[in-house]
Image (cartoon, rainbow, N blue to C red; front, side, top):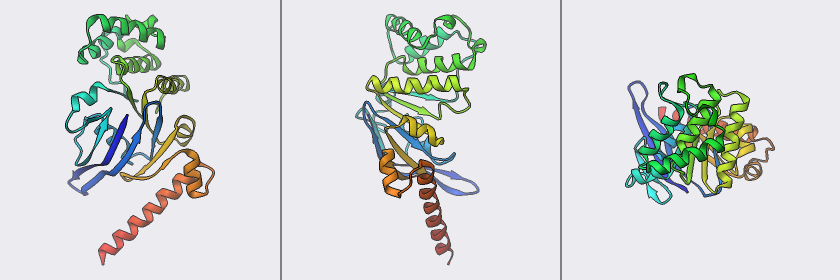
Length: 257
């Protein structure tokens, strides 16, 4: 599972100074649960996920993945985590099976385990026809299936999807959504980020709304609707971020005097 404790990340910009990309965020994601991190572009979703995956070091607070602290046990965190984004980042000159093998070796899997896992994933994801094909000859949908395979070759209990359906055609996006549901059936903890309201409504058990790095609200869709007396998630979302923007504008004006 995932647990974050007052997680923060500060960047320094030459023109803007201190930028709080993630500002004291606390939430959890349990095994067998799908949690959506919902926010506009630049809200802090990707930074949060990069902190959880140990790509970035936090400026404050911490988080745990399957009980392992991202600060103290980054290698153990990575062993228990699968990360998938919209950017496949695949090596074009390698064949599909070579990519999966490469990532299996990174996770210290034995050659026999890698081989059996490739067979299992090829059947699960319908990859048999292009396993021996070079990456630069694959379609977008094939590449995304391969990205899934390389992310879960070590069969991690926690999956993170960072805007994984953005820019994909409807059939490829559906493959990703189906796989997210399969992860839940397999009792994995699933955290996915999106700026698409309908996607969050359809997929998530719980929704976390984040804006300007801050966690604005979290709960089931019914919880969020009751909180704001709004029916549509879009209306709930807009009400929350407009209120935060007003508060921040007021705070900025007060500092000027």
